Image 1 (cartoon, helix red, strand yellow):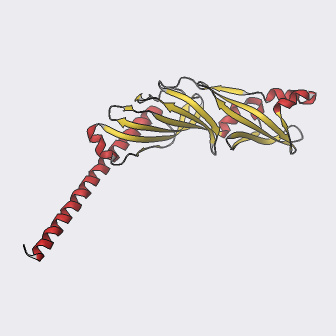
Image 2 (cartoon, one colour; image 1 turned 90 degrees about the vertical axis):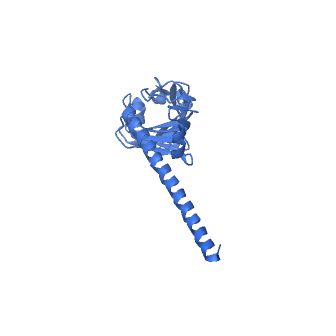
Image 3 (cartoon, one colour; image 1 turned 90 degrees about the horizontal axis):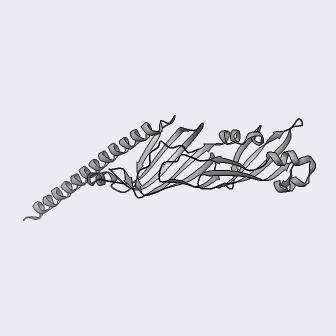
Length: 240
């Protein structure tokens, strides 16, 4: 074969390989896009959020895997999900999801806005603004007829079915005291009662979902959950 013909043959083979690779990638992207669209539609139907729903397939060549009944790792997020008088932003990470709806388990987070957290704290939250610092909950503002500046720091802990907010220190006019020490001050006994721990039940979780952690984040109180392997949990459960 002449050198010119060989070069042309190599060029044709190279172009053909490039076209095949492009077609495979385009097919993969098309299947992936359709799969993500189906996940978004199903999540939106179950969660009925106020805000947008997003789905991402994070496994390489996830689209082609769906042809064999596998979706791979999936991340789904939804903003403005209503549960038990609370509005949540939810993110779910599932591993090895199949087209049949099974998975190898995963994790999830639900973020409750600080305005809702303050309302659930009762009297201690009245007039105070909630925020987070180092994972602890910080309540700050002015209280009393004199408008004294007050800051309350509280830890956040969980059990399998509840989240507890425990005030640990209170600062007034820049002077801090442990909440436990207020019991020895007769004038502060009423404040000590208001700063008792508050527990919020986390009930009616979908089967296979368990509460594992909680902390005060940048945008609200963040609840962490584990998801057991098996059928993808129904979104019909109540989280707070």
